[in-house]
Image 1 (cartoon, rainbow, N blue to C red):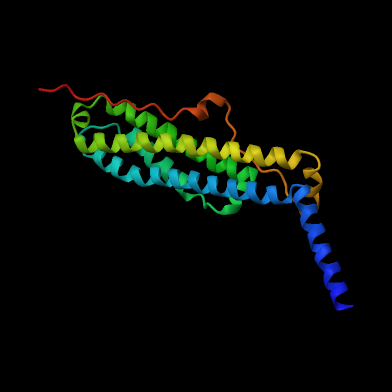
Image 2 (image 1 turned 135 degrees about the vertical axis):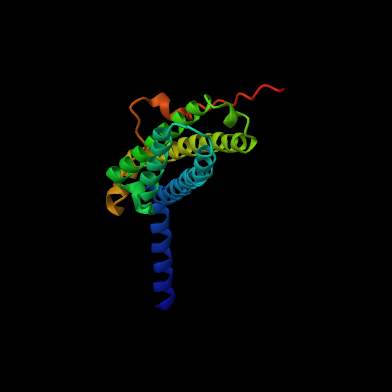
Amino acid sequence: MNWIKRSGLAALVLASTLGLSGCGYNEFQRLDEQVKAQWSEVLSQYQRRADLIPNIVNTVKGEANFEQETLTKVVEARAKATSIQVTPELANNPEALKKWQSAQGELSSALSRLLVVTENYPNLKANQGFQDLRVQLEGTENRITVARNRYIKSVADYNVHARSFPNNLTAMVFSYDTKPNFTVENEAAIQTAPAVSFDKPASK
């Protein structure tokens, strides 16, 4: 009798496994892990940018008569962006994600303005340390764009899976809600990092 029970249990487990696989359960797990991995990369690149800013600000501070309002806006925007507590749950909260994205957008705008203004200061343009920081910033902005676009795609893939039949039934049973995604007023804006000029000073 025991072997019959064991055989019946094994058959039940097999049927359940096949059933879960057939209704998209395993794919939910794969796509969810993919979204988490892409979100971690997004946060890593934004943090890399935040870490660069103090060095940029300190270098610019050394320039006489630099526009303090522009510099202050960068400092304030960074403080606002980094003050938002980032947790794994933030990505699943539409309002929190929107607030965090807005703060990062304000920082992007402030940085863009700062870099445009520095073009009016020959000493900064000739400062190799500052130019190196600008190159690092450009690379970081590009990485942010790539990471963000990959995250957008991973969330879209997850949501399409969650809405498709019969996966939507699995989503209902296991409470797999669709995930919020990045939003922009101008879709083209999210594809483009802030403009950075790298004109080299004329050689003497």
